[in-house]
Image 1 (spheres, rainbow, N blue to C red):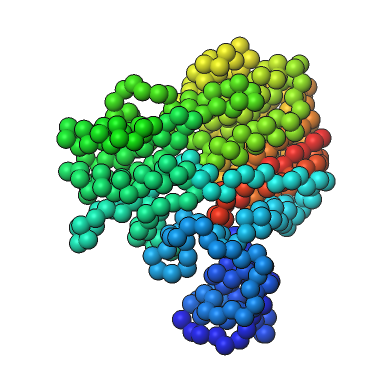
Image 2: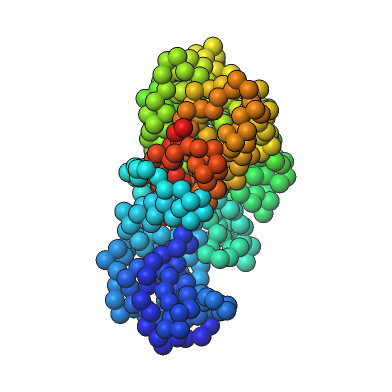
Length: 451
């Protein structure tokens, strides 16, 4: 690294929580640890023709948005935990950054400007994370086990004794879990513990590369007996092999009280990391759709029915579409469990290969809810655009009058929004950021399209 003596004024912050500044010659500099408004000096690590990247080494003007990180393992130093990137930035400022990212992506990538910016969805900034994947490493030279996230820019596991973004009762388990794994015969063949919390259960999925013999299985049972609420699952191979250590016990599930819905799930199923935000998000999405009792709705990328089942409490019929037959079957079971089987229907389809013909085959719906993975819903948006431009492709079929799009990637949202607005004739009537992952660079959002 080379030490720069020039003082730089930080102009903005990117999603990797790097300050962005310009040198006197106009070259862009990305600065780890720096915040907008600060004047800093930098130790440069990477240099390209148009930009440099480095670490802040001195500061002579501090941002009013800088705060003391809430976790002792956060930082820029070697060995610091890499699970969070923005703990040094005030939580309210983090949300503002993410809202701006949504706006900028919609305009610069999709040429879409929402008619109204909704207030961002935000909630607790600590103890919010009900899902996490902790790496496990037995270090023979130290005679100890490490359990946690990886260090910043490293494959090593951070020496985490607490974690402030998971609930306190989970953070309190980190050190006892170290002792447990260290005591097990298979301690060097247990690379991962995945956390998946329900309303009543702390599910811990232990990735076991070898079958566990009875002494190790009993150690897990004893741990669960000492820590109420803990439920052990084993994963010998892929996610489909996940199973309970012992049958019985409370059900792993979460609730959406506003709609009287209970959602059972397996710990390796996709569910939202932040249940507090998910509850608010589902409520806002349904209010934005404004479903009437006589309307038919399609829930694209329906998963286990997180939106489908609440929609079914309001609509005449909801069609849930997902790419996996296994997920479709689980959705049917969840609908039946909640007494909504007669108002829901589920089908499996490759949603990344949608065509106008397939859209027509699913029938006319008054409104859509779209909740894709990070890759977005390009094929779906493209099929909509094709029909809008060529109505003869779908005689007698009409496009939905309103679409609510829930996104976990602002760039793919912007891409799809560009098709819906600039080709298919929709208006983007509203949008906002959703702060599902405080202190991280992850941005979720919600947007409304009307035709």
